[in-house]
Image (cartoon, rainbow, N blue to C red):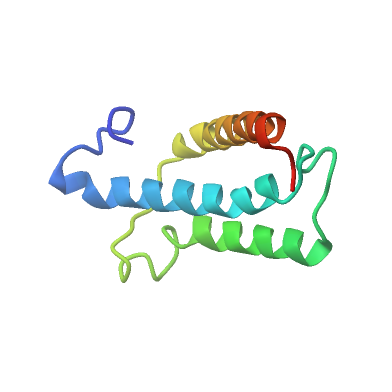
Length: 112
């Protein structure tokens, strides 16, 4: 956000905060799936349907909030479409790093 979208001035503060909010909420939501199993989440182990549905709902609301009618209330603003090109890459990198650290932890200390 700082360099790619030039959100590095007080005039662009809400753009930076909106991007930070969305990526933070999505990564915090995904961490539930990442640490619930020693396997690879979504591929080797799937969560119960209620958890999957709520994950989708939370992510959808989090993405919609900066774009919707309540954005001004929370001092957020709509994100540029290029942001959504980078977002999946950021989330995949986050999930990959989390899986790698989890694998290291399991090898070192075991799972339970």
